[in-house]
Length: 242
Image 1 (spheres, rainbow, N blue to C red):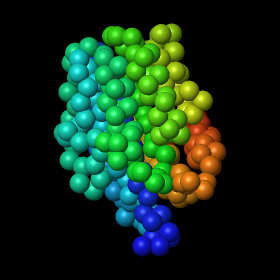
Image 2: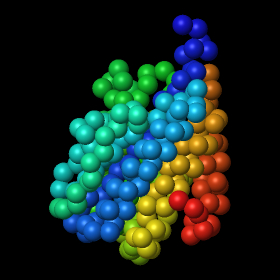
Image 3: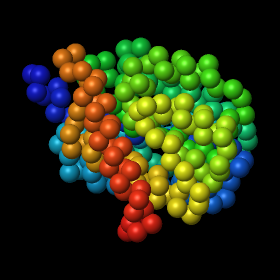
């Protein structure tokens, strides 16, 4: 296999950290479930058109405990079988951070990320409140992971204006993403889809990947492009045809 063959089919991980605590019951979790189904279908179609990228979904729910959907840390979108997320329990975000930390290791170290090359993942954190437990220590551990640092990260604040929650989300995204306010849960599905689909489309077209001979700055610059396109699209989110 030559060098060209090694990079013709990159893996792009779309990762959603979903608050499944009691306060998410009802319309909020229904919107999340609907968004995940439509994202899966869109990524299947996008993947069928792409000769460069395979799309993988990772759904990590956190309440009293943290679980990977289907007991898999990642799954090719073509085979991803989704059952509704059920909400109930506490909001133990620190447990989700621990699981994400383990996933963002290289494959040779027990994680899901490639040992050589690879595309920076897209990570969304969706929550409607601040964590039940302090998660600063777990987030600091996450920040030691190179794959977390280059990931495009978005935090979606659902129907709240809580300073503590906003601070947690901003600490999660850092300078490599945005915190988005969704004050109306009826629009939550559209917000989630807009972020994931815009980011996936831009990344799959450019297929920027990390390697020994290309700087992470290339990926970070690409993330800036994605952020700008998402900001532009959010202005018109109410007019989008879904």
